[in-house]
Image 1 (cartoon, helix red, strand yellow):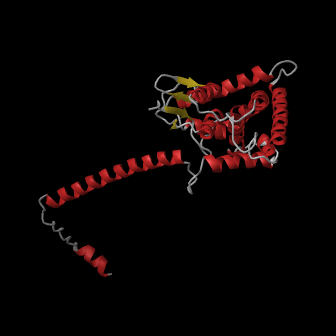
Image 2 (cartoon, helix red, strand yellow):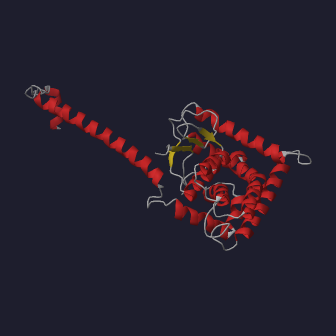
Length: 307
């Protein structure tokens, strides 16, 4: 019997199985390759401390970072690229490098550095899924890590100031989106009719940018003008991450059902307690009702009431 594969990742929202790009890359690849992952969505019982998510756990290994997790899955014979030619394999590596160099800095900036987006969407969402006191510490640490990564990759001379860096990374990201749109064309996936590693990476990077509702949306607006990329994201969501009528993915529905069961058990316990209290009250000795004394008015008060 194969060892169980458990993926710890950030959960979903806005119709996505995860709002976290790295988590989404791994989840999509697992769907494409048929890898039987058990997804453990991070909640307030989490005991991590560094935010190194997603994490794949087996009987013998604990692996983080999407590239390493995907390599491990391939070694376990879960390969979404087995039909690709050598040239397509080389193109995959080149496009993933392009995504990480040109698009990722803008995605990180949109989520973690842009002030309005961070304080109204990103920080509250992630903090609500972390245990105390990590909820006070880790979002800020993740934001600083994103800014450091942006500056390390895009902050070289002559772009010394953050404003200059911001302008450049959004120009690069829009160019990258245009290239992806041209490469995809009218095809369902980037290499024909079957999804591959490249599709998992593109989906993981684009879907949160496409679906999460931000107050500052300059890159999101550009993406929504590229209808084939939006259709690409929607098709993968509909085909591989079917959503229930209530807008909840199957993994999320399991969590809802578990919480509902706990709530039902709690309500039943409360009802049983109330019934016992009611029985005790009925069985306790009943005293006859006390007769209230009749108040007698003075002659002066009687005179007032008559008038």
